[in-house]
Image (cartoon, rainbow, N blue to C red):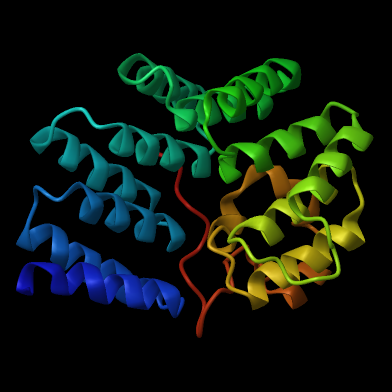
Length: 256
């Protein structure tokens, strides 16, 4: 039981949006049992939320040094590069993940998102659609990325039609985690900013699991200069995320 205490407590802190407390607990869990992959990825994820991207990458590299090659570790490593805006490195990790597991949807997500954020939107759509076809059930992360890419490619109808399919009643609260964030992404991609802000506020209020990563998500960069974002609870005047009581650290250092 003691070995699980840190990870269990860290999960509670994450649900309460006490991210600094979560970092401390997940760090403790890793120290107690360095062989647990889930503790290492949770520790790294918590560090990314507090904008310590160098620490997050270090946590994954340490885990990779003592554990076998695991898709989950590669996925988290690629996610760190995404939040650090190191998209070439993100693509390389995604392709490595697909070498390890060609059917892994997260590999296609990493590759597709890295392509999209470098302007290669049609290639990105191909990656996302490949992942959706290969998956027995929709991968929400990939599906949301695909909706955003449709919008960025100018296919507004396809983006909205697909959004309405997974979220048919847009006036009802979403029942699946990340769908409010997904809706915000879709509306941001077609430059319907009022709807994007409304869904971001919904994501914040319902503690959507994707929302804590919003300040570093490059897909929302066009919205981040808007004064209204401070009211939404996204970033303060110096770019720090407002996600819990008290401000978190300043913008991440991209030395990765």
